[in-house]
Image (cartoon, rainbow, N blue to C red; front, side):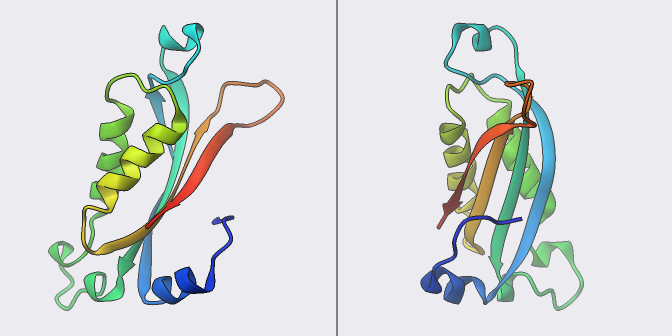
Length: 132
């Protein structure tokens, strides 16, 4: 679920899009600024919604080559999450967002990441942002 306020300008852009999404994708990630976080990977959960131009997401011949493949989104998350140690969730999300937007068919994305094992009294802590 998108919780970021949508401006009229963003709404006008997104109304001509189809969404593809990855929900609750969990990976082990080397992330964190504290010394104890640098010795072992942490469980992280990713949610990504990519907004694809409708003309780039409406296949004429029912072919995978006519759309943005879910594998592209999932592999982008995996590539950045499995890379070298990252200190901040913001940095990791920015890298994912920048890669997704290299596809001209993707006009925007909402990306959130969560660390799920930080505090015993909450499900997760994380960040989320729009990429345009």
